[in-house]
Length: 295
Image (cartoon, rainbow, N blue to C red; front, side, top):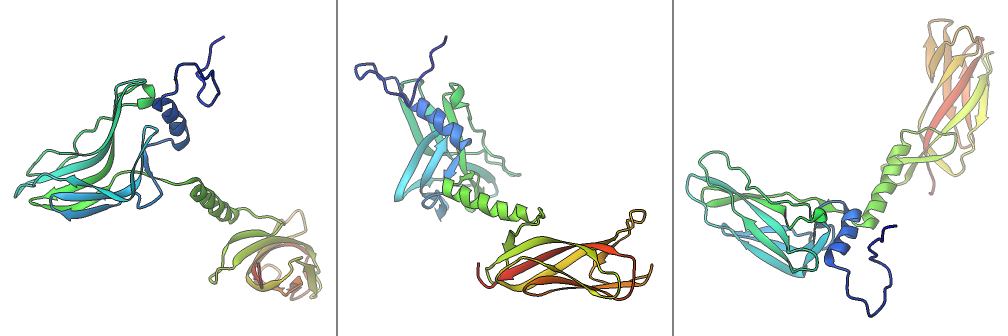
């Protein structure tokens, strides 16, 4: 039997301290899953102050499960070495975590890693990215690429991933569920999106069944209450002769084979299909997309 290293457990108050930053980092890394900047505050937004200075605003940074922050309303100015006329360079603003090992002293800094100056296309400097979970000692996470052309900073490019909060993820998943519903048909009422005025857009499949063949109207209650407007009404009708399987789309102005025409309508209560003449019976399925007077 092997003993686990407990982290969120109670131990003897007299026992030697044994929970370290890397223990907490292991938990956070298993949750966050990657390096990045959390989506809170100004999210370490960059601002070019001059050709020698880029400002990084407040935010929360995570590197290998280790968190650090620039406090709200504060910032860090990163000094950029002068460029040279006719030459190009890429500098990288990094969040750098260094550890001396378990129970040791850690440092966490924001630094500029200078790239090589060249007359051609500039390349990024190499970063050290040890796996801290696997006892690595140094990890550098890129925040921004500072592109220097000649004497000027021409652009600052974001290089980090933005890490959403749990409420943001919940909102995203809810919206995704609505989008996915657009690809799933059901006899039950479904929300499949939003109408242009912000109201929910609904969809429902109605199994009409056999259509009366003798130039008469076939009706089927759709079972939707509080309906305001049908946005899209469509479906299909299949010949009930099993040897035929002949299917037409609804509504159908006419079909050469037998010259059948079928109209498709809906009101507040029911679906209505009207056949133009005596014809072989068809069985219909209708899809209705609609908005309601209130959600």
